[in-house]
Length: 266
Length: 120
Image 1 (cartoon, rainbow over the protein chains, first blue to last red):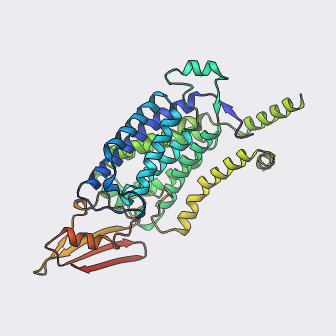
Image 2: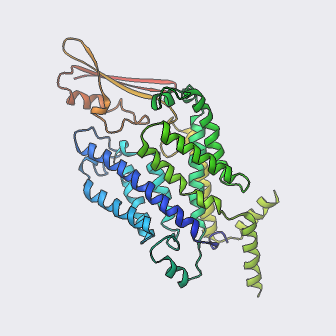
Image 3: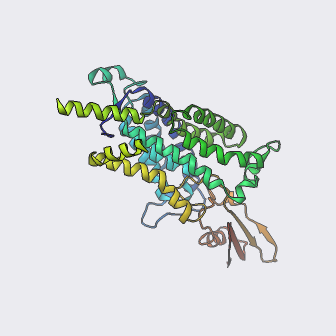
């Protein structure tokens, strides 16, 4: 029933565009670290039997990630493109401890779900022809996984910050201009992130959660430095927002189940 | 409660794909909770981003006994907090700083203060 449900293609196509941009930036950040590791920096292999990061061919990796990002952005072969981005970033996670980041882990998960999302039925080259060829709808279940991933990311990012060290504001102070009230920002961040992660699930709260999310990411990018890294993270999270706005409700599932029962009875 | 019961009943009648999907959703929602409760802080794969756990510093001593602070950016591409740099970094720094006669790497974590000194 859940996996048979099909929905309009617009939201997931918009999410695909945002994900492609975020994955491109995160991959670029990974390439910068790869180049340093190929230079004279210390490597920290995850396992001895895996390839050494210092020996990884950077240019072919960058070329594949760049092509996959562009084709995903345009909606050309979105399944293979998203799968390539997931595999390429999973490879980075596997080869060296310094290439791990929660943002990259998020890219791997989101690209894996988007690889199954049929996100080329809108905002893509040839989208109209694809819609006309079938019923114009796309499977809902990958969208549920995208929403669960981003919701989980927000909630646990908030919960893990509820510790004495973060709440002193020292970390925020070290990353932001002097005029920023670091302790206040630190204390506000914890409930804000949890509220976004939870709020994305409910009809009454999702608009507020999205507004809070936009404000949070704008604040992070504006105040905390590293605009490339944090813009990438924002885009990755934003890829779930259209799906939250147009999320299938339990009532829709009940209606779908009733329709299935009727068609079985017929 | 009625909705939850309906969903549980519907899933009970669902296909194996439905149950796999539900398992993945639960893993995504609850897996990081297990990592947060059971794992070290910070841990990987749990979205524990910028949570402020820990710090890594290193110093080296020259033949005259003078202490020098190591700029880790010169040696590490990404000095992540969750990596135990006390294990291999002291030996790496010994080989990378020819003037060093001793190297110390300190990793400060909640409740722990790991230090490893090596003579080069």
